[in-house]
Image (cartoon, rainbow, N blue to C red; front, side, top):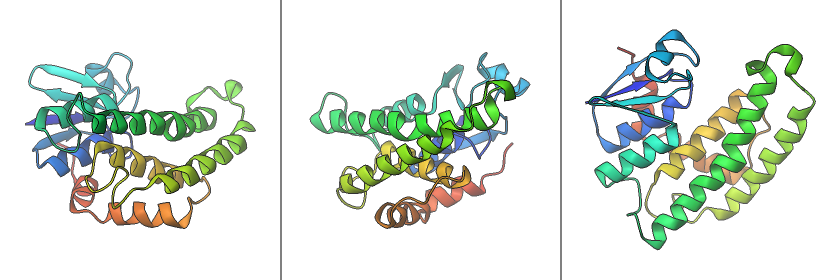
Length: 197
C-alpha cells in the first residue's frame, strides 16, 4: 500500500486521483507545503511525496510517471511514439499551465510581501487563457490524447481546477465541459472524499 504526503488541495491531489484510477490502496498524510510534517519526507518541504515501501519519491509528475509505468496503466509504454506524444503533452502542460499558476501563487502568497509583484498576475492570466485555448484545439477525443486516459489528463484538469481557485478567467466552453466531465469520474470523487490517516 502507498502513502501520499500532502494536502488534498495541493498537487498531492494529482497523485491521489491517479492511485484511485489505478485501483491502488493508499493512505494520506495531510501535510501542508513547508510544514514540519512535509519536511520529514522531503527536506525542501515540497509536496507531494509518495512512500512506496522504504522509498520516498517526490514531484507529482515524476510520481505519476512512476506509477503509470509500474502498473502499466494511464500511460503509453516507454519507447513508443505514443509515449513521446504523451511526454510532449505533459511537458507542455508543466510549462504552459502549471508554471503560470505557480508564478501567480508566488506573487500572491508564497514570496515575502516585499518580493511580490502583483502587477505580473494580469499577464499570467492572459497567458493561461491563451494556453487554454490552444489546449482546447488539441483535444483528440474523450481524453487529451484520444481514446485512452493518461496522467496528462489528470495534470490538465488539476491545473484547470487550480486556475478556478486562483481567480483566473474561466477557460473556454469546450475545455470547461471536458474538465467538468473528468471531474465526474468516480476516481476523482473518491480522491476528493479521501480522509487523511
